[in-house]
Length: 198
Image (cartoon, one colour):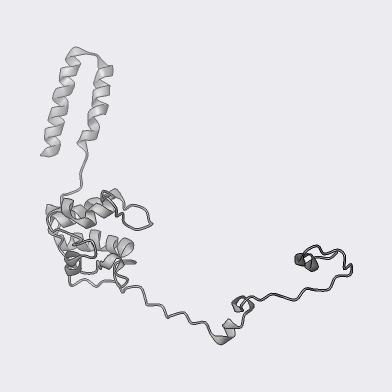
């Protein structure tokens, strides 16, 4: 319906211009108006919310957010459940279901927040990923609880330096070495000169 309306408007505009000018203007207007005939993706209302979450949202969270916002709780925030998103972190709730403009998550991934930009130290999310997150929050941020979240990054063992490693030369405290003997006793002008052949 939207497409047929735009085509009708396009035809009317072209006919108006054709009456006034020649083919060149006709072509210019046609090329100018064609971008308005974009074939948009289906709206989130036409998509099952659970499928939308599983196919569009969970991959973004897993690939771009979970490294810092699961067990590490960077900023006090965990993004591995809807409840934790609603609870938020040190800066408050991450999402306001139904209101993407008030959702901190959307502000920080869009880089419109005054001081926070995510992913931290990484590239900005793709525009489609941001649009998907906005649509997800707008539809109430449904969460597929039955889906399996990937395991968090394995905890690494605490690094311990063994006594054998501690005996390596670079772990030894520095000390003032004794000065080596030189053949020509008049040559050294300072202690460092004892370490170069003279």
